[in-house]
Length: 109
Image 1: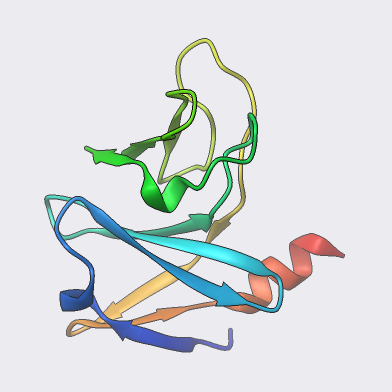
Image 2: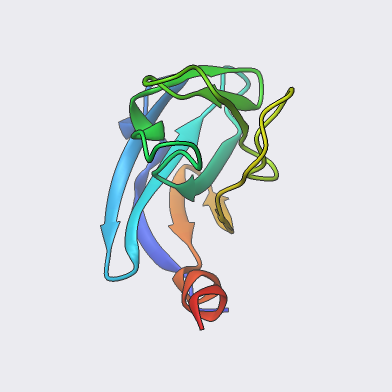
């Protein structure tokens, strides 16, 4: 897998996110309260809301537009809602963060 450097974990606040622009679209990179890092497409499956601007809780994010809750682990909507976004592999090497964009490109084909 080809890993692309996207910055340092310290650039993302606890329970916060950072948006990374790629040729395949925007990726939201989240940091949980437990310092876990997840990356998913930055649009809610409901109405396309910017998930990177949502509220992070446990291993999920709540969309700021209509309160859909999306799992950061699976990309799937939780509760009664249905839909999902793609997840992107992310690696944390002593605070340096990397994503595997090729997984996003393969999924688009």
